[in-house]
Image 1 (cartoon, helix red, strand yellow):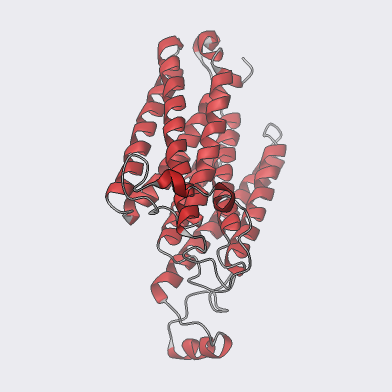
Image 2: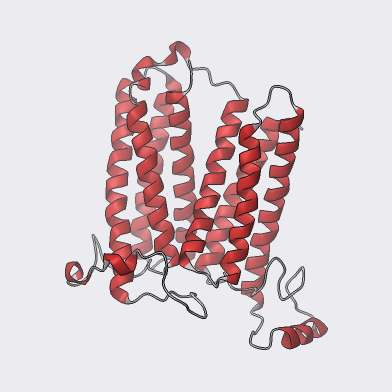
Length: 327
């Protein structure tokens, strides 16, 4: 199999892992299995009578919740398959004379670190800083795999599109802003702050007087038996939620500004199409965010909001690659 074909498959697998991770987290199944990498010391969810008897002896303080445990294990199975695909990409890249070497090695190192974060997510009982880091690692992996794919497939833009290239600095700022917003989203989710505000446009009540930034954004929240369902008080969660909403407005505005500048100035269809895709993804992402508030965080829409952020990031990675690459 060619590296380019394998990279396409791996990109799809990575998106599946991101969505399954979001589904697992939003279903409160992150601790469906209290150990790692197995589930109650087994390679599958224990369901047979003799297996449940073993669980009762080894984990006397836990009750097997089969549905949540299966969600967690399916996530681990898919993530494991992704790890094998990345390993295969690394092997093929090292064997090929004309393939990049440093980037595949870095991607392989990243997925090993991702596995460690997955383990710590369980062993540290959903500590928000670890959960957020695990989510950001998935987005970083997704972006780097696309970058490797783009480097394996020559990008030819007729004439070089020098007019669009003048927007490279703005595109770099946009991807930085989007990354900060994704981090804010991860922090909102890992602290169970997604429903801290249930009205539009900002929050209900006298929210300004209840802002608590120091507590809301402290990376360490003390010792707790578990961080499941969150440990922060309402003002801190509300502050996180408000910051994410304000960040969403700023992010949408600057991304749309980049898109319209590209549509107006770019000479190539490639860049104009990427800009129109950016417009569509931003509008969709804003609609999904509003729907989460209005419809009280339905699971399908919440997972789609995570996927939308990942696709937005990929779109901006492509735009930046096209604008910054050597002609």
